[in-house]
Length: 634
Image 1 (cartoon, one colour):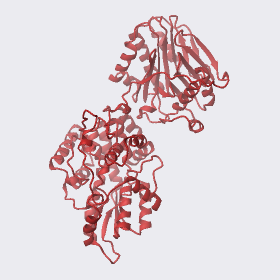
Image 2 (cartoon, helix red, strand yellow):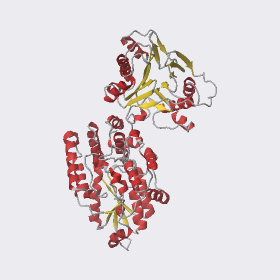
Image 3 (spheres, helix red, strand yellow):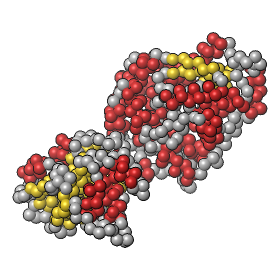
Image 4 (tube, helix red, strand yellow):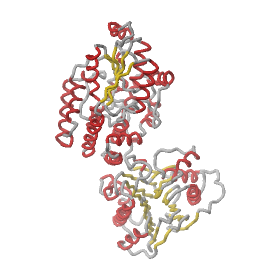
């Protein structure tokens, strides 16, 4: 499984900092045989603990600029013969994708920073039994550090906190961790920990004795004389000042913890974090949003340029649909029906509020989710609405997605992400064809809701969108030309886009941006309020929500979990940030509530992404690897 290792030196150690770093990197390379999917390092010095994590294998990570900056700041800049302690990790992914920085190690929880080898098989039970502890990641290591931190905060020594935690854990586990105080704890229930100490005040540990043997043979300042093993169900405490060691077993827990609580150490994550993003002081858009600018008060240009949403109104809508009403019960309008919340609520409004007789249609291009189909069935059954399906060559569409996704993975770019939904755009053509076939001229799209505008998608292609109110054929000719030029440039730079999907992609551009659009957009006329929409659907129709997310937006779209994961990982925001920012501007939501909501909305839907990858025939792990390694905009 994973490789864990570390070095501790006291003030009198003779190793110079460059030599110490060379030794540490040798440990990284040797330990990579135990796990090559992610890596990380924590360095403990007098002023606190610095943490660096990477979704790259160790041999690649140690060559990155970010890693070099980290070790320069924490190791190379430290004066020679000052005490230093470092613990490292080479990860074999078991629980939680490495694309999420919080899943990689070292892990911090409850003021404890540590690394872990093994699998905790009762982690779900431990989280459930300790509801006071807050879970932030998927990796099982988090519960180990959280429990140790909780015990230390309650007054137990690091040794006793580790003992209690190791006794509670089921499954193969070896750990090394720092907490408040000047101690390092090593513990294992399998014996997969080896350590050795030099005469001049250096201690090295690793997951395998062979790794230590290789290190000892290459050490320029003297061979280590004795290799020690931490036996199963035992641990070792290392005093970081004196280098004194004492071993313990897991039966040595002392009495109940005293009431005093220990302070937490200063912990600094070197990795750039989304939490560090500068955000607008009025809405929540971050500095990575395309074309954004902030004034002296920190208010963004999108807030300053915002015009309050004014709908055309119910009377105007009534006038528009009046010529099409039928009194004989036959359909008098065609309604595009995706199964998402906007189209479901729109069908409710059209049937119950406007009193029209809609003919609903769905274009299934292979990415309509099962939950969308069930919700469509609920609405149509309850409202007595005929529902037409037009199905594409779903296998062919998914092969097209796979071809483009494989091309994108070879050279990822945020501006090309809309290409993955190109196959859906034929629904415009389907609507026009149904109009001709049925003789029903009125086609209604339950769209045009400006609260859900996502201008950043074309923004990443270098295009500042003109005002189009959700009607894409109405964007300016200059915008269309810019988009076409951008896509052409991407194809030239990455010929893998010249694949079987090229005709489908060109048709999507034509149907979306070129052909005249004369459909009725429902939310140009009627106001949209998320609370009313969701309450009506759930209370009146038993509308189903997704089990893996609290948001109800985009749950009918099989692609959304993937592309929002990419945007959030690379740019630090997703569609949800734009939705909440627009709600703030319209007075529907406070900024504080919006910040709270996006913490939940933006949690990656890992299983939904895996399902998407399976449907199109691409490795989900490859998606996570590539996205995790993409340069971040923050």
